[in-house]
Image (cartoon, rainbow, N blue to C red; front, side, top):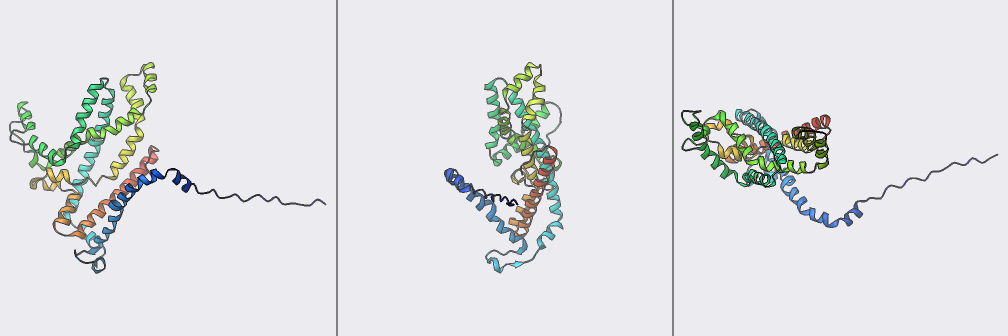
Length: 318
């Protein structure tokens, strides 16, 4: 009889960790990243400990264990305050207007700049367009207020010289115009700067695609529609997802500097609401609750937008 022998296969070895060899190989790059990691931890993650204030009746000068815990009291007050919903309305309105105008216009401007054949003119226009980005909002607000002034304001003088109006308009005193003024101001200040990333993406498109399109008789408009825009689609989608994530975190500088008591019902955003009711009135716990609401909604919007675009365009950041 033949002996039956069982074939024993060798147990596969677990692959050795490649982290430490890779770390030793690129140790200088890891060392260079340490300051940035520490910076992100100190200024972005460590302050999250302060969120506990929203669940306490916080009193300055007392230690953490001496504070009185009140649960969701300040969140209930927040959702029962009419000013909160007014600030939320203003924030969403200005955010959506800013997202539409501040996202579409830089793309159009980048495509138009890319179509310029005179390099001197292209560089001149690009330089002039992104210079306002380096002007602080304090100075920019002063310029905008002066241009819209009823006393020798450039806008009113132009409209009156064209006989479109018979008397100066008090732009800064009309609440129904405030959202448009803020949006237009933001577009003027940031369009040139936001265009840079789209120009960088366009420069990565192979010139042979344009040459082949010209050989086939494609017009410049057809080249833009079929080559330029599809070539920067990934950049557009990623920036749009990030912008949606910051939809309700638009800050307060523009609204604080351009606003006044006459347009208060239209100028107060959530960040300005937290500043006035949190720090201004010494209600630190209430102000922290507002900021937690902003952060949670921003994270939800980011994940929702990322999931939608991942299904529709197959592009995502997560």
